[in-house]
Amino acid sequence: MPPTHFFMRLITRITYFFLITSLLCAVIVTLLAQTQSDEIIAYIGARPNQAWLDYQFAVNVYDARTRLIVPLTDQSLQAQLFNWSPNGEYIGFLARTHGAITNPSSLYVIRHDGHEPRLISGDLIVIITTERPPYWTLDSQNMIFQAQQTGANIVQFYRGWLDGRPPELLDLSAPQAQDYIQNLFPPYQTAPNGIFQAQVDYRDNQWGLFVVIRGIRTKIHPLAAEEMMPDAPDWSPDSTRIALSQREGGVPMIWVMSLTGEKLFRIERGRYPLWKPVLEG
Image 1 (cartoon, rainbow, N blue to C red):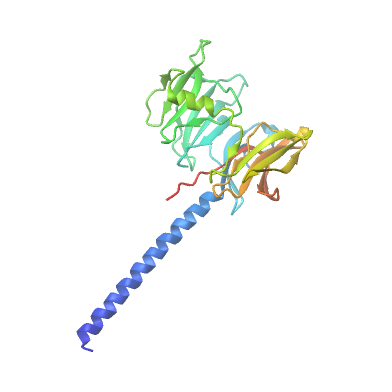
Image 2 (image 1 turned 60 degrees about the horizontal axis):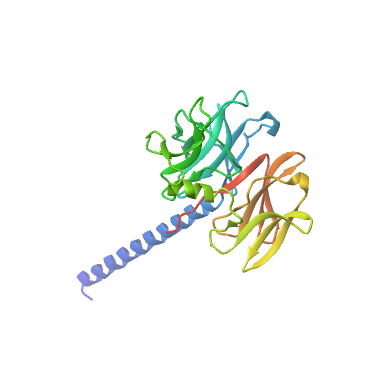
């Protein structure tokens, strides 16, 4: 074989090798990124090394791989409720400044790592009407909330913007306001796969966590009356695990369980668990 042909074939093989290696690396990075997101749970809880009765509540994130807990919200704020944006890039949360329990609540947004905090509700007083988390629009650019002007008694719907615009007053008939209302009391929490469902319910004279899989309803975790919390269960992005908060000795704890009720791990001093969303593709 002439030397020129030999070197051309060698160069071609080397090029293919590096191309395939690059593609494999890209796939591995993508899978690792999804795995990491699959293992992140945010919740309202005591800051690390603080007791629940200290009432220093933050939006914390828990990494199930490392068991590391990181508070994301500022110490000057008492976090009350929160929700991930659908794209997993932001967290919207309701909070009041530390001090008197009568301090008004406001709506804030931070990035998933706690950076770039911003006030979304302006001078409005945000009203917390249920235990449901703040409501995001599907494009992850707006949050819908109920609020009233300072000194007024009328509660109205508003749309908050991530780009710094002032909140926009919404009519009750606006599609965004109606979506907000319809999501206040979902009968079941549907898993990301769109098939499984979960709910805390009262059946046969006992509370419990129930799941519905392929039409079969099963109680996977019993709950005593003193353990009950108004928090909704939440599904992991891969639809294989459920996070649920309950009282233990008067203090909220979070359990992550399998579909059969096996307890996988616990997060102490926390409630309102929400897995970080994972975008497909």
